Image 1 (cartoon, rainbow, N blue to C red):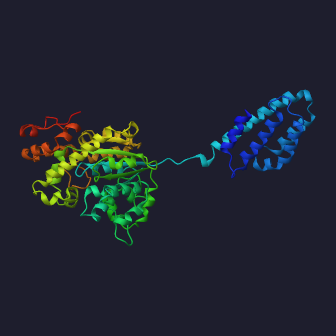
Image 2 (image 1 turned 90 degrees about the horizontal axis):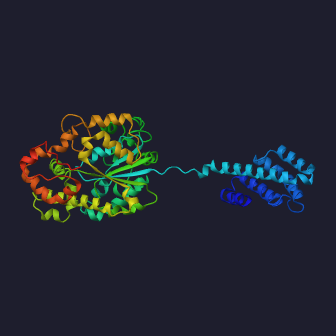
Length: 455
């Protein structure tokens, strides 16, 4: 028992805390003088008495044992006859056990042994016009989440004549720094001089930048309209971004500028991160239809993705080549996950946009559970309302109330079958793997009772 107690002390004693050290000294003498033999060693009682006399003051200061207890114990030892030594041995062992409990309780409650929980880092990985802004808002409106939308936009707009593949490493390093709330990483991609939080791309989509500690106008548990945030919180200094980031349990980034999973392997294995990937995909035919309505807005991004092919391709062929790149990248990301070790595969979640809009409450609950967020009642109401509005939405890059199910099916009555047929040839492998059934005729395309989503 004494050996176990000594080992326990060696693990837990601290120079800054004299209590455990004095306990250790007392226990050591008890073991040396009184055990393991009932009669002790020659002169053991005397040595123990001298020890108690010499350390009474120190023990008093450490509040381990009151001096009155020491004096009583000392007096009792002096008057006990030899035949009572076995009883004294038993008492000493009980005292050692009590001291052991004190030592264990003292160290288990020590603040130095309590570690703060590591933040959860979530990367919403998708492509343009795939419903990622909506999914980003599912996270961004949660009061426990610090969210930024497409921070890599700053890199791409700084190096507009580069290519997506050359910029991927810079994008990865930017993402890692933001996950760790190091916002100095933006210094290389923003103009020098004073900056505000409104210098960030689409900053007003982040509820965290519209509520304390970034902006005191709104409370954290509010659903904050982006227009209100932009009007009232745009003048906050850039330094509040990092301060806000460090105050949340979850840091979520939505990004559309990754084209393979291998580039993210270092982040998945990084011990300083607690990374989860939510991979959002959408029917390529719906993506194609949406991109047709945002050609000008996506022009620079498309040029960076296509690189040298941009100038060589005919204008009418560019959209299909772009979709080929997007489909191939989604396919490679999904396939790469299957070859990962189980521990890393558990850090990946695939979500189809169509599944989400068909059953938004249940699917959002699954996403929240995966990243350990509570689906709060006011968020359930917001999700229900935002997916059951009228019409198709009044802005391509804003998340507002719309009939999300109709939006997901709009390509079926708006795209000519000729375009659909050509696109299916480009993306057939990806569509088959992800569960999007091909249509073989215009009649199948227009027949909305025909479900094109495999389970």
